[in-house]
Length: 316
Image (cartoon, rainbow, N blue to C red; front, side):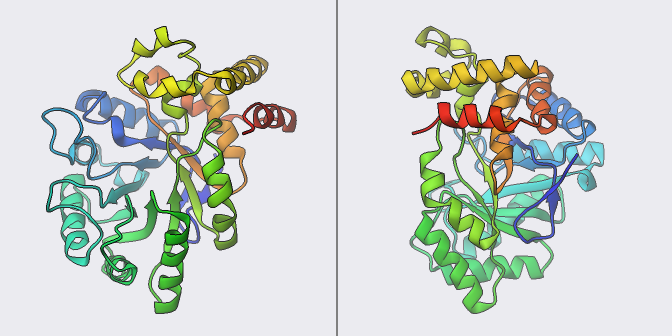
C-alpha cells in the first residue's frame, strides 16, 4: 500500500489510522488485541491514542488505552510494525494537564511506561494551553526529540492563529516544529478545516490526520432516523446530522457505495484520503467486521465523478 509522510518528519504511514479511543471503553483488552493484530496483519501501521483515553468511562482513570496498547506490544513484539501516536495536555487530574515543561516532562514518562516502549513516534499536544508560553512548550518538545524519546510532534484542537504562531516560534528559535495537525474533518464537517486550516497546512507542508472522520458513525449509514440512535453507545452524537444536508450526503454515499460494491464507511474515508493535503483519516472499530469495512477505504480509488458527487452533496 502507498505510504504518506507525516509533514516533513521522514516518518511514513499507510494512510489509514486506527483510533485507540475505543480501547478500554467499547473494546476490552482481549478484543483490542484481536483488532490490533488484524490491523497490522492487513498491512496497516498507524495507531493513534492519548493519555486521557478513556478517562470518561466510570471506573477508568485515564491511560487505559495506552496500557492496553503497551500490553499488546509486550506480548506481540510488534513495536517495529507500527507508527505510534499519542497525546498530552487534556486534564488527567486537576494538577495533571496543560503544556508546561514540568508537566510534559512528567507526562511523557508516564506514557512511555504505560506503552512499554522507549520512544513515541508522534507526540501531540491534545489541546492548546494559553497559560504556557509557546516557546516553553516547543523547547520542551524539542528536548524530547533530542533525547530520542519522541520522533516527531503534532497538535490537535489548536486555533489556526495559535497553530501558525507555534510554527513561527519553532522557526525563530530553531526548535522542532509541529509536523502534523489533527482537526475534525469529514464529509459533513468540512467548513472549519477548509476555511481556517487547509491552506495553512498546504503552505507549510503539515501532515493532516483527521478525527471524527466518520462523523461519530453517521457516515457509516447505520443511523437514518432518531430511532436508530440507540444502536450504539456513541449514537447520541449523531442526532445533529439528521437533517436535509445529512440525508443528501447519505444518498450520495449510498450511490457511490453501490457503484463500487463497498460500504458507505469505506467511501466516506476514501473521500477524505483523496482530499489534497490529507495524510490519514482516523477511524475506530470494535469488531473485525467493522475493521475490514474501514480497511477497504485504503484500497478504494474513487473516480473524479464519484469525488465530485460526494463533494457537491456535502457542500455547505
